Amino acid sequence: MRLLPLPGGALRLSLDADEAGLLDQLVGQLIELLQSHSGTALDPDPLFASLEVGGSDEQPADPALARLFPSAYEDDDEASQFRRVTEQGLLNRKLQDAMDVTTAIGLGASEDAGTPVELEITPETLPTWVRTLTSLRLAIAARVGLEREDDHAQLLQHEDTRGTVLVYDWLAAILDSVLRMTEHGHEA
Image 1 (cartoon, rainbow, N blue to C red):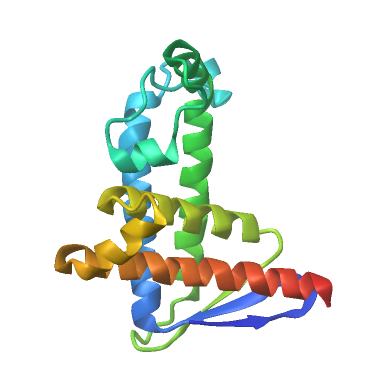
Image 2 (cartoon, rainbow, N blue to C red):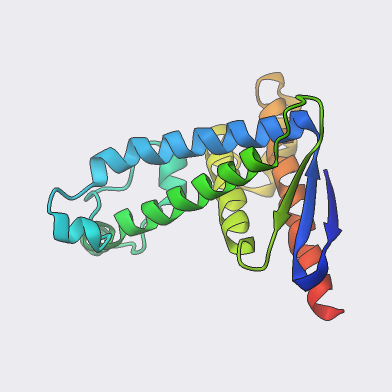
């Protein structure tokens, strides 16, 4: 992974073919996860659906979805009411962000499978990338039980979670690099 600043505050993210394939696969899995939850949260009323209003009454049972859509209130009744009104809109935005990122990765891919993928992240698309990379990290952390910093080292020691934690770290490195480069670009 390499990042280069471009004029106008944009960045060029260069990924080798394997990195691009992995990122696209992860974003695809995020899209599937979000779509699976959307089916239970869609409101049949077209007016509410067009307003992105609607959601389930309860926090999702899936730990990754629960991390992506946490309860806004400690009180169960308040949390349920808030979730019913906001969840579908949040889900739609996460889904659209993920689809925009996977489209960008696909557009950056060349015909030659071994060629690095060049992606441009503009100031306009930066929030989409940040939200999607963050959602991926939250979902991965929930899947492997990474809740505290102490968990990280412990999970790296276990063969069955090591690879997933390394992917989590790789996503963190991309996110951190993009944010640092963006901050540095604004200072210049």
